Length: 272
Image (cartoon, rainbow, N blue to C red; front, side, top):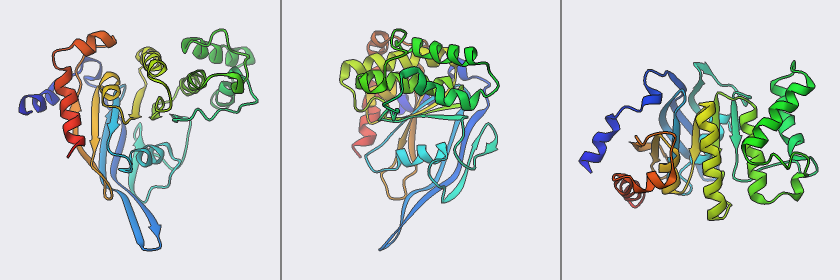
């Protein structure tokens, strides 16, 4: 394991010289209960560089999703600060787009109408044609080029999640936040959408933070895997750099001589 830890010093070409896009300082989350305060997160520090893809893993209940929703501005911060592009966040904003496990689409609207809701907010001065082009571009990128005008209620779960991914990228956010976006999908659809996500992310070069329970998914997606300790008082327990070449091919990743060392290291952390 010592040799594997040394690999955290490896440089990742597309991140060299990049500034921090996301910084969490002394982050704390407390929920009051009838038996006193329950401290979910405590003294959590995290920095993510511009254009970096970070996966976060940990046991259920360790506060992974709590952390993500605090960064998104959807969950009140009990202590500490979150900075995005050097600006302290005070609430939700279009600079942070979220893809949840459930797509959360408006079922009576079409795919393009669901994406358009955010596009109108972020690009209020764009022409109607320009807004439509943005929506169509990202829906096409996620493989829904023939489904612009289908109602969300008529789409499969995997197709709905494709709309959710298109909606997030269409906002042109500074940070993409992914809360187990493939957790409810079958393994085949899950793999397809991982490939779709990476293909668009590679082109857009948006800073990304993904919560996942899946060790293999965390390795395939990320430049760095963050491991959280179990709660209460959860914090960052360890991290592992994943210096595989990009763009990534699933077959090449699985056949990489270090793949199962990385996998074993992460599983060993989770088992202790």
